[in-house]
Image (cartoon, rainbow, N blue to C red; front, side):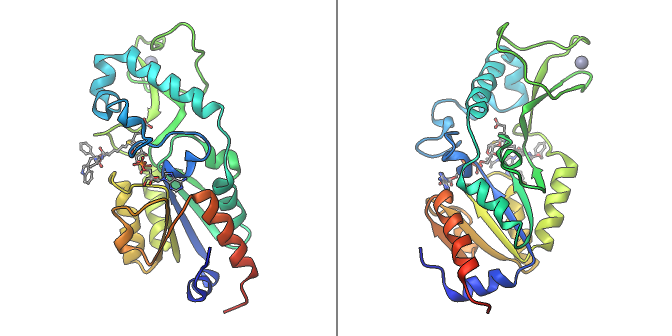
Length: 246
Ligand code: BJW
Ligand code: ZN
């Protein structure tokens, strides 16, 4: 892959770099994306599963859907893209802002991670809000119930729910402060997460997209690289480290 010299120079001068990631970065780990040809929402409708009303109406079905996805996540490993982002910490002050709930950035070893949409490995009681940061076994089937009588749900953010305040606030600050803002493997359709690239751009950051295809955000990016994240990021790191100063 050919990276323009002007692009590499600007990246080299950067101090603070944000990686804003979505489901596409984990696709090469075997975790399906949400939308598109291979997306899980071709098979399951989001309005039926990824909102609180759906959970209350049919808790066992929603719980089992998450248990099924946890199995996939549990047997997946971070890929080259996650690992390369960790490598970037040798050269920049890196913040990862992820919409993913799969925990793969932390498992890869990233030091600063904001999780905007929660974490599929965690759960909490809808009534007393006690957190259960342990996996529940698959048996017995159906949704577990807390000692207080409340249903236990996955600690993820569903449609119509607020994002965790500290995570969004930290992400917003890092975006405003960034010199370079990478947008990796996201359709950039879901808000308020999708405001972050615009916040970074207005504050002067260079926007760089990595995706297998053009998205909503492509027109506003300074550079777009259309290939798999696990291909582009290692090549970029190699180009960066072999590029002469300026
Ligand atoms: C590759 C690749 C490879 C593949 N390499 N690339 C305007 C402003 C504010 C809010 C709204 C608004 N309009 C509507 C809303 C409400 C709503 C929203 O945004 N709806 C839109 C769909 C229009 N937002 C909300 O409800 C949010 N809350 C909120 O706004 O609170 C305020 C409020 C309160 C009360 C009432 C009303 C408002 C909450 C959003 C929560 C999102 N939750 C989910 C599910 C999480 C749990 C779970 O996992 O089950 O989060 S939805 C789903 O989408 C998930 C993802 O994090 C999120 C984003 O998806 P992502 O990551 O972009 O994946 P894909 O599949 O879309 O894209 C993958 C990309 O990868 C593609 O581009 C591929 O090409 C690419 N790719 N392989 C590189 N190898
Ligand atoms: Zn409880």
